[in-house]
Image: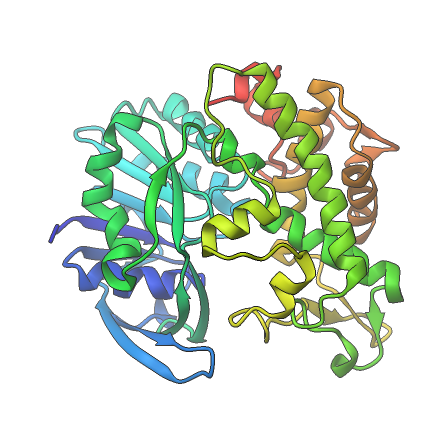
Length: 401
């Protein structure tokens, strides 16, 4: 059992699982959060079965809780971001001045969408952080919810296989023993990590960024995306329909065009884990699902997840444009895919269609027709957009890492 000082950043559902699992394995846990007064030093994870009965409980301790990075970052060997993707860059720049440059530090995220390697390389250069190593997990290793914020989390089980990308692939075995097995395998007995050859495979593997926006857009096409009563709003997965499944497939097909072109362009590299939706679902859950709709409707863990809606000025229930389904999956999902498509001169009709709809919802202009705006037109919104050119990349070859 390894005893390492780990700082968790953020208070997401996943943080309520990370803290008990890692603390239970003997690690020293610090927490950086905007809401330190809302957190208990003891966190409980309830391993919950599909019938909502509790299979087991894991308790974990937080040694230090703070909103001040200078108090929790400097002595950390491992730093894990448990935040919405759209917050990664902002937070990395905030903590960078306090990261130790005297010994190796591992910075990671348990959800690797959106070019995490670009973000960390950005602060490495800006702050001359020569001792940083970094990693990103392809998909969140478990299904989690929060029962009581800052105290109790629910965990509905782990994936069968987890994928991770590392800045230094030679450190995979070391990191597996140091922390990766403790994230999942040592408790659940499954979810062993396998190594992706590159971070681009995670960026172009398709999960949240195509699932969420295609579902919301399909609801809009079906009934205008507004409801008089909250009870009329479909559940996000349990009420998944044929139109949503077809829209997801069309979006996935656009991504397949990009994946195929990347594989052809970089034919000396392995993209074993850069997968389409159903292949990724089958790998992650060891499932035999061959039908997109059924994979959601019959899910034992996703059934009660609601559609993110808020009341508008006319007292209608409408999509919450501040939700991560937009801030993450639009700005750090489809917009990145569109940039890659532009660089590869590939037409992506469904990506364009959904971005054009989503930008109207959020009140932004990302595309004009099918043309992506240049990043300097968004200069008043630092860190909002995840396009590679935000990091100074000017060609597809720059983003391969």
